[in-house]
Image 1 (cartoon, rainbow, N blue to C red):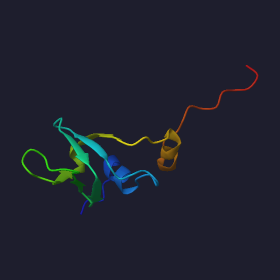
Image 2: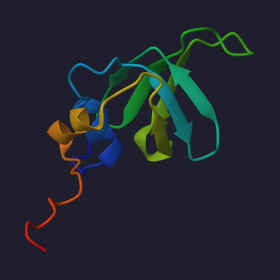
Image 3: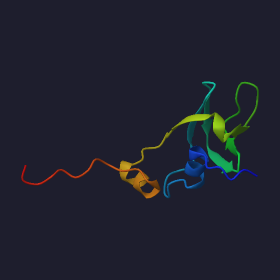
Amino acid sequence: MSTLSNPWRDFFRNWPEGVPRRGVVITSFDEQIPFAEFLTSETFLLLERPAPDSLGARTVVLSFDEVAALKFTDVVKSKTFQSIGFEGPPPKAQGR
C-alpha cells in the first residue's frame, strides 16, 4: 500500500468531532455525490448515498485522487475546523 499522503484522505480520516458524517462530495469529473455516511481505506473513499441514484446505486467507491471538493449540508461553526488545522485571521494589533 502507498504511504503517500493525500489531503482528502487525511481530512476524511480526521473528520471533525461533532460534525455529522454527511455532505456532498464533488468529483474531478464534476459529479456531485450526496452521502449520509462514509468509510476510508488507504486509497479509496466509500460513500453511502441517502437514497439511490437514477441507476439504483446507493454505494460509491471513489479514489481520493478524484475528490475535488466537499460541501457540508449541516450548519457547522468555523471554530469546529480549528481542531484539524484551519486557522482564522491573525488577531488585530492593539493600539494602532
